[in-house]
Image 1 (cartoon, helix red, strand yellow):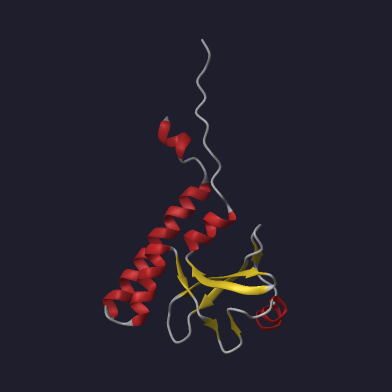
Image 2 (cartoon, helix red, strand yellow; image 1 turned 60 degrees about the horizontal axis):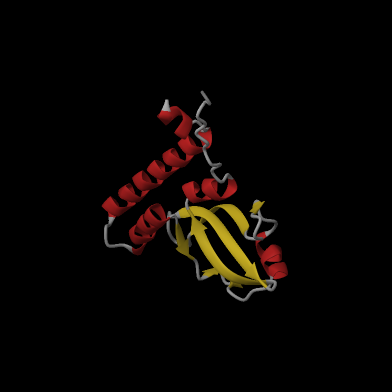
Length: 138
């Protein structure tokens, strides 16, 4: 069965269900006030999987040192192989938009910050393994 071999992992099911949940959440926010910045951010997060973050409160911004980020936000929930720190369950200020905060560093300083959707985080933490279709020798 091709479908079964292609999509046999729970990670894929979780990834798809997380994406559907994010789309449903963005649709409900957009219906509340389709022109609000909150609805636009929720929709961008659901469609793109991430949105750029300029600063975290008044303390962390691009250029902040890694030690400062650690003292302000604490230890990250996850660290990716490239050194990116992930903080789960973070909410955009004055909105209901939430996700995982990703902070990347270059030379010990913050280079980029993004809010990630659940589907994006699952894909980063559990990269898909290639599916091999083996053909029996005759």
